[in-house]
Amino acid sequence: MMFSNIVILTGAGISAESGLQTFRASDGLWEGHRVEDVATPEAFARNPALVHQFYDARRERLGEVEPNAAHVALARLDAEWPGELLIVTQNVDDLHERAGAQRLLHMHGELTSGWCLGCNARFGWSEAMGEAAQCPACETVGRVRPDIVWFGEMPYQMERIEAALMDADLFVSIGTSGAVYPAAGFVQTAAYCGAHTLEINLEPSQGSMFFAERRCGLAGEEVPKWVGEVLGYSDHSSPISL
Ligand SMILES: [Zn+2]
Image (cartoon, rainbow, N blue to C red):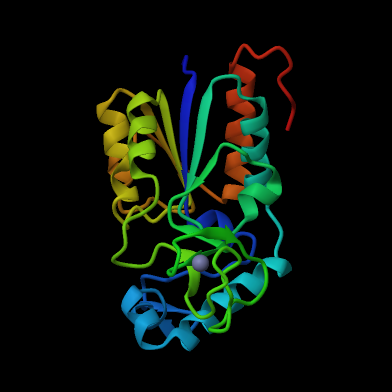
């Protein structure tokens, strides 16, 4: 198969293999919290202390985990692939960038970013945020929120993602449930526009039937294998061994 333009979507499954727990649709709980109590704009308006506490804990946890073999393989693909490539992640952790990925877009925001509701600035944030956080741009206290796309909010950079999907020759979905829109619809957009589509997941996702090709297994095993194939198939001058 010949292709040059790759779009990759990654979801909770790839981070779970590094030990990061995420929202579980099965019981509707996230670290014991209901989503509507910690991951909605209404929750933040009602109880900012609880929401900050929740995300501060998530941010702190980043320091205890490492990128896994799947993150490393995708970073390698990013570095080696001579064609177009975009990694769209639903994850708010920083494991892709810590592995070295650069052509990366966080559609649901980032734990390591803050957003000031006073002046609309966004900025890197690595410590606890809390209600006393001061905006580094306008110096207002108490109006900084996690730069996270909460339930009911619009994911980031949808126009750029749509454009990339329409241009893609290959769309790969890794570790996603296929249950959360708009990401769950990416495969249909890419396929409609002529891309080959591949799902790599622990088990067939809810949207499995939309993919032309499916591989079941751990991302940490299946992704390095797939990346090796892709780099081997390309006419790149120095394909690397994995
Ligand atoms: Zn500000």
